[in-house]
Every structure is written in structure tokens, then in C-alpha cells.
Amino acid sequence: MANAPQNIRAIKEKGHFEIVWTDEKTTHYPFKYLRCECPCAACVNEFTGERTLDPNTVSEDIVPTEVGFSGNYALKIKWSDGHHTGLYSWDNLDRLANQQQANL
Ligand SMILES: [Zn+2]
Image (cartoon, rainbow, N blue to C red; front, side):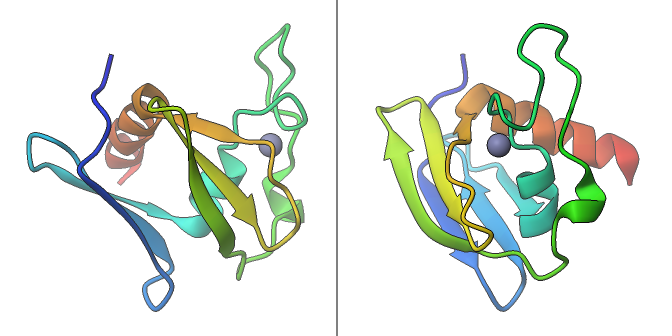
């Protein structure tokens, strides 16, 4: 399991989250990308794992309006579209960083 990061910042000028992990690795997540990867039951079918959220319905200028923690295992984000049920676990964020790199 991934350890809780050292630092998490939402950098609005750059339109992304920056996470500094305990091993000093730094990863970035564009806001829209992270919103589209929301793992909650409203965005992903919890039985099939199929994504039900259509990325085309997410605004290009989506931003986080509130950022908090859920225990010490996940990041909790409230978005400017009002969506707030997604919990991004450290493991998931670690996986998303690798997935993004694979797509570059
Ligand atoms: Zn969601």
C-alpha cells in the first residue's frame, strides 16, 4: 500500500494537482483528468468496474473547490460541478500517475 504523501497542492494557475510522495517522487494530475477518473459509485459501475461517467460531460475548466482527507488513506475532492463523492486512495493516485505516463 502506498504511504500518505508528504504534500498535496491544487495549483489553479497550472490546472493540476501536485503530489509529493514520501520518496520525494512528484506526480501531477490535471484537474479534468482526475475528475474523469473519479472512482465513486456514481462514476463507475461497482459491479462491472465499467466507467459510467462520460468525460465529454466534464467541463474543460473544472476545478476543485474543496480538498480534504479521508482518514489517512485517501484524498477527498469536491469539484466545481458539485461532485464530491469521490475518494482517491493513495494506491489509486499512484496507479493513475503510472497510467498517465504510459499514455504520454
Ligand atoms: Zn464520482
